[in-house]
Length: 433
Ligand code: 4AD
Ligand code: MG
Image (cartoon, rainbow, N blue to C red; front, side):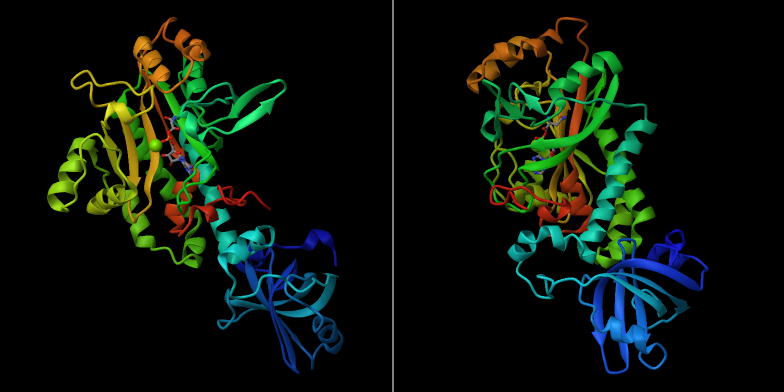
């Protein structure tokens, strides 16, 4: 077997070769007195391989030893076979066993916790393989979207001296003789970056000590953020809508097969590419919830998951909600001039129960007001003096937002739990493997 002649299974399925060399792992095996059938996987796809005793008795004897996840090299004749899982079958003419795997700890029906305990092995499943491929497309699409629209990639430190999204979800890290925190957001540093580069973006690890055990919270996740000088709320909400449409378009272009494996409703996704997404104010949301759905949400409270879900379901497409109550928003979200009780901020809520996927705002230029807000949150405004410098040297209006990568992966893949949107999830209850 010549190493250079190996095709991936995907190449074999899509190409014209009738004799192929493949290598990978035994995904399924079935043995009878006359045949060994294996389904081979190599990450790119799966393919059925057959080893008949009558034609190749020596290979048949070898193949009888194969277990799930054994690693092999195979040569054989490729032909169409409608009964095979991916439409082709390889009649094996040569088999090299690289390793006979020990009994695989994951069998067909397993509790979710066992699957998370064996995450390092469960990654090999077709389900995780499909999700990871879609995640790959989404991450690539985010970079492509911002780069083609003239944004520069800009990096911020992960070790940060202070909070940006509230002290209660900070992770403390011993830093030589001091304490620092893991990044909750790229934003404050991005606000410095725009004075150099104008329009910037980033995608990076983000940390929140979330005490909530919901299907939507991770303690380590990836956030894709943008920040732009001179832009205002009505502009960044449109950027966010375009970004989401572009991401879905790319997934539809590259991952139909994976979406089918995940049994995702592709029509819904196609609709999200075509549809207009409404922008409505928080006050209007309350109006709809309270008058059309008999809910009883008082002005001034943040929307809870059921309320977010209801409003997104009302429109059946992603919805941008703006002008949340200033008081419950982060210190950097500015009050609107018309009504200071309302902040110039937005969330994008995804339908089908996925709720908040993006949060953003204009950035306050009112230094005294921000200092006051920080003090009431128990923060020392002096720690933020560099941030306030940005309001002293050529200050301009600016805005930005952050998109939760795993929230978007979850929604596009139709997952029950955000933990499956990232290879090795970290939550309050899980920090290994
Ligand atoms: O709404 P958030 O907290 O906004 C910010 O951090 C801003 N500084 C972003 C900015 O303006 N540059 O977080 C943004 C998004 C949320 O909408 C959500 O999708 C995701 O990050 N997110 C989480 N995803 C998974 N697990 C968590 N614990 C998350 N917390 C936020
Ligand atoms: Mg938010």
